[in-house]
Amino acid sequence: MSSRDPFEKFRELIAILRAENGCPWDRKQTPASIKKYLLAETNELAEAIEQDDPEHICEEIGDLFYILLMLCRIFEEQGQFTVETALENIFTKMIRRHPHVFAGKPAGSEADLRRQWKAIKEIEKKTG
Image (cartoon, rainbow, N blue to C red; front, side, top):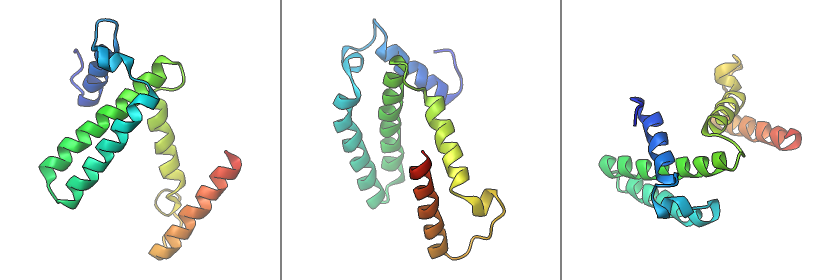
């Protein structure tokens, strides 16, 4: 693995695991088959948060990253989208949903922010 960037290094690892000479288990995974692991790892992360155990939280975040990047890799192999697309989409969405931060609009109360978030989300559903 040539990259020094941890994210890229991890992406390379997943590509190797999914490659022809990679791991048979990793190679056979599909979005449907990996869903149970996504749910399990999400629950394990939630439990670690409840236990307020930073070391365990860190481990479970890593496990969840593995599942998420595996899903991205599968969809990339299918020509559907890349991890960059998913990250750019969430980046754009977060900016759009935070006009009080990025568009200079007043923040208001927490209740105002929730209403604003829901209103923006409804607009996104109608237009998108």
